[in-house]
Length: 357
Image (tube, rainbow, N blue to C red; front, side, top):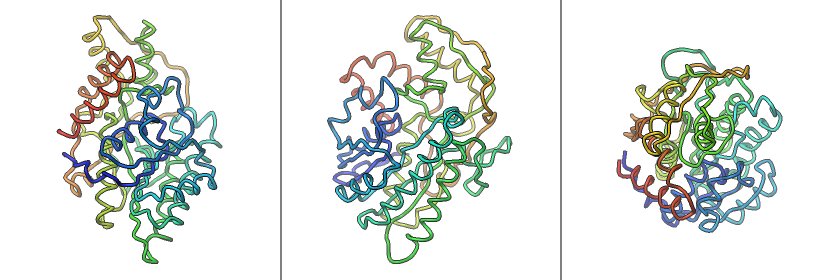
């Protein structure tokens, strides 16, 4: 679905987690749209980082702070008086949540409380989107996609903390934004596995592929048969922006929405890796390969899909890319993004391409 970004021109938008991979793509899109963008986040979570590579801090207001610091966050809200808030700040890695569960819950649950409390105290906010995950649902290993009315009960500390974030959001929505004349529209959005150029996180398959390719090593795949709803980062980014805009104009659009690929693009990790090798070898002339090597890590779901019928019915939304298109764009970014200018150009081209689908 084509989406007119001109809605965001001169809108005051606050994005938490703006220094992360998805946050950078989101803010780059908002800057392109002419929004007045303020970000609130810790320093970039990886070295290197897409946020620094594309020079985004020079083109938006970047406030470095901890989402757990309510006083600092409130001061930023007071200064900016945002109209739209997109909440992406999180500890987003399943394996890290096993290593550091307390920090994960503090960030993902109390961080959400703090954002919602700031919105409660800031009358300028008219639209809020809390970005969660497909992993919020109680895991049942079934062959069809989870719907928005399924039970929320994530298995591991990361997934469970995001389920808690959903419940916190629903509580604040009912307690403070469904009465007393507040116009703020409140929505949570549950995206599938996001892939794209500029992701350098640990324990994610595409960054693992890129690191192996650059080091001239085989890609190590832990769970080749696990099925995931892989999608290019611009799919959920555009969906977040569309829903935030729609509910800004009509509060009845607020709710809970899944964002993921169609069934044909829910592939196994092994198939995804094979696609990466194919496009990497085609573009570089190399002979990148992969192998299976389990590491006895913690439990991870084997089969995840999302039913996105609600998004399709409500907004006429459709995924714009197939998974192979996403891999091709990732390889293009990785091979050709050699400096700030080239990276910005590739991001701009991919954003434009997405808008024209």
